Length: 52
Image (cartoon, rainbow, N blue to C red; front, top):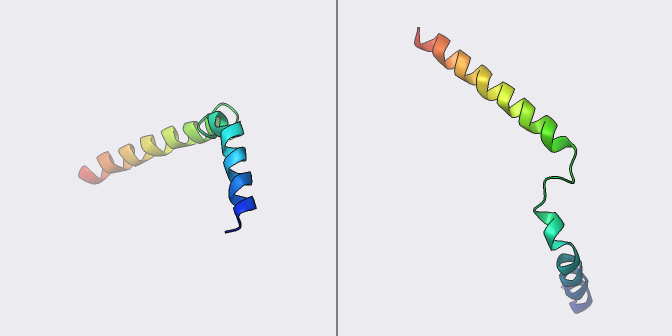
C-alpha cells in the first residue's frame, strides 16, 4: 500500500470513528430489527410445531 493511501485512511478513520459504530445514521436498522424479530418468532413457532 502506498503511504499516502494509509495516511488518507487514517485521517478518514480519525474524523469518522464515532459514526462507524453508530446505528442511528442508518434508517434501515429499524426495519432490519423488525424483520429479525419476525423471523425469530417464525422459527420459534416452527420449532414448536416440529416438536409435536
